[in-house]
Image 1 (cartoon, helix red, strand yellow):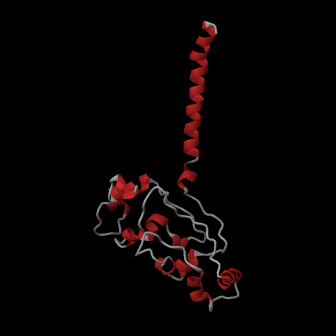
Image 2: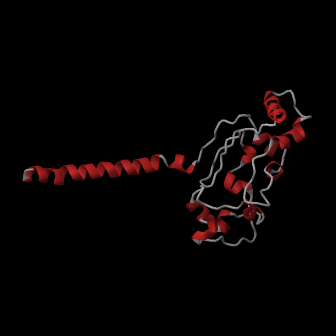
Image 3: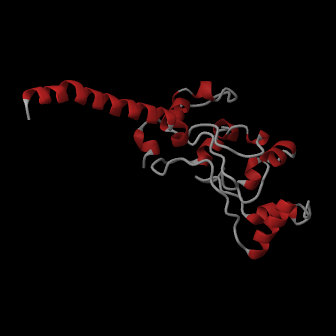
Length: 189
């Protein structure tokens, strides 16, 4: 290869190529952020369920349906029999309740699509947070006003650390709240 061709590659082509690669990375990083963080994720569910009606208008507590949230790590997705506590009597003729009843009679669980999910590599315990008085809405948004539930807050390490480092700002409704752990082993087990 001639010296002039090599000079052209090193002085012109290489910087342009590196610039295009860096620009592509930066644009992709910012454009895909919402998808990476899952903010706005609202999948179509097998049954149209209104949290606005049940949690909002009717005032049903989150823990009635999402059992285990105050005793364990997970807020469980309700089983069909919890729904049927009311719907064996109430509004049985509605199309969505008819679908629900079919799942109940067949013994099949409703194949709900999970919306809020902490990454697999992070440990999160709902009971620790719920039992200290942290409201579900803090992380999940105002579910009682949602016809269709979507993820409104990011479940990233930054979001968790913001709350752990400055809980008074993030949780103004709590009178006394301790800072959460910031050491890696608290969440990465």
